[in-house]
Image 1 (cartoon, helix red, strand yellow):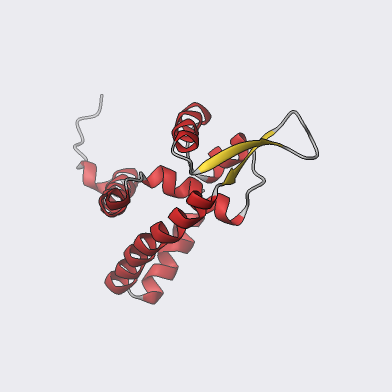
Image 2: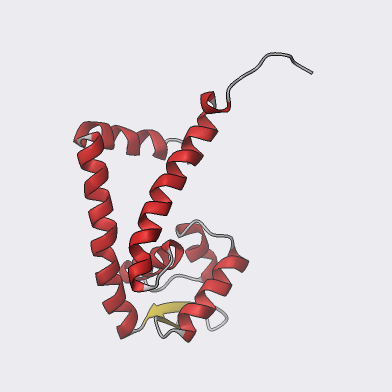
Length: 140
């Protein structure tokens, strides 16, 4: 066992987690005004641009594991935001689509997400924000 002390703040994984927590909590508190979780906003946002995704594809896109996503989608179906439909080409696949209520909700939610993005832009400036996005993308 090593006796070398390394402060947790010096680890990149800690810094990334701390930044994620701060940004996530900020957005979550904004979205709570409309009774929506950040994860549900991600689902709505992704489906607003591509409705022909399977649950597996959607899970990857919204950064959730499939069982957790299934529970969230069940709640979203019950709330009338999305509905499940059988895929046209492969009838074994189930796809998700936004309802009219879901489309209206995503427009409202987008304002909150955009406001947060604008605040981050103000805080970091356009060059640092662009660099940060590029660096983060290189990690996944």
